[in-house]
Length: 223
Image 1 (cartoon, helix red, strand yellow):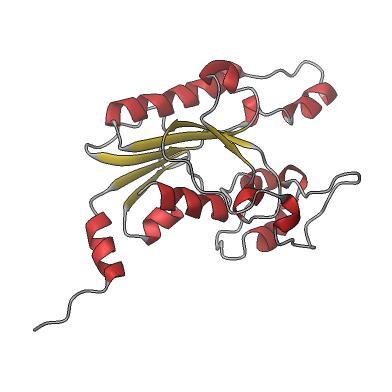
Image 2 (cartoon, helix red, strand yellow):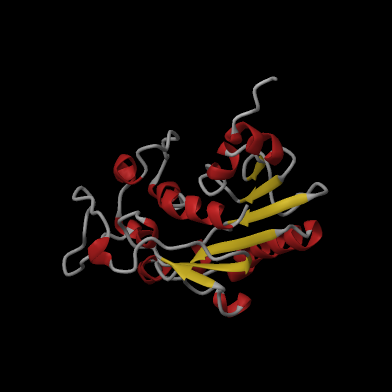
């Protein structure tokens, strides 16, 4: 009798026809666990692809969407206050969000999720289906994030900050107890994402990386 294939190999063969669209995926951090498990992951991101005019293939299995948060972020207030005449461009921001929704409803996947740091996007999308901080899944910093969609909620590992293994190299603002990725420089990439090979070009790209603990937990809940 011939040897049977290892379970991991069987899973990869089973998954290879399942298309995962990673919209505005940047470096592909959110979809990384799917790619490692053999899914057909397609990262739709600039400059190669633009969600505005992207036509999804047939038989899409799952959609992960992370439209740019710039216009919806409360952190933008500081910049706006220091630059008289500047204002938010909600229309530009919503053009991308709406494109993600178009792709979702056109492809009708088994599961889908649209994420954004908690801010002003709820004014258009309504109450989110799930909110989390990276430390819920073992990544020791804060970044309150909201998710809308049709998905199984990932299982958190920690419910108290005191129980989370800390990284003493991460900067904590005076008067705060937790490091916030919104105030970390890209030089902290190796401390936050030691297994992430892509070197970020700027702080914004670094801060946009999906925390690996959450990415793994989301994958485990949605396969």
